[in-house]
Image (tube, rainbow, N blue to C red):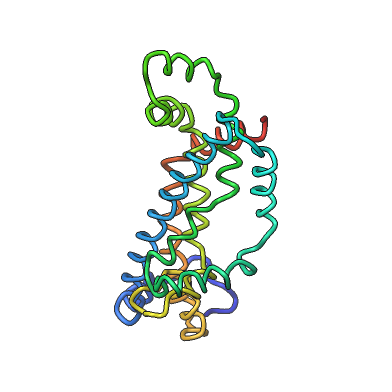
Length: 233
């Protein structure tokens, strides 16, 4: 580290990048993070869209009370629910597994709330016409509701991708095998192992940003529209 800071280095060096890929299981953790993040995001979108469809277009007893309690769970942080979930996953022998990290993504209150607000505004005439044509609710969901919800689904894909990619707390608790560690956990260990090697730390941090930048670049149009529509509603 040079003082004063040299904003434009005199010599370009890739030594730090070579180090993180040779002396640290960085590539393996990168693959773990990609695998866990993609599957967690897809599971969240699937489960949340189905739950939102039920809350938006079906009438059943205690619907408003159940949805209110569902939203109230937003106030409970993961640090509180982490211990009960860990105990449950331990009983099912899912600790130190990818499935144990992915499993909590089935339950995402914010995603259900955002999709429910959008689906409520989809005219019931589309559903009624599909029912008259003989379509069941599965076909209605797949062929009508989902295509008309692409914008909020894309918005949630970007938001949840970033959340799962940067998640440190849950993988740290569930995973014990170094070969299964995710990128945030590895970067945290690098902070203690290479505390004074700022070039190595910055190289790792820069690489960890690339997937998020790529996802946002391809989905930014839908992401911005989704945020604007959510704010209006």
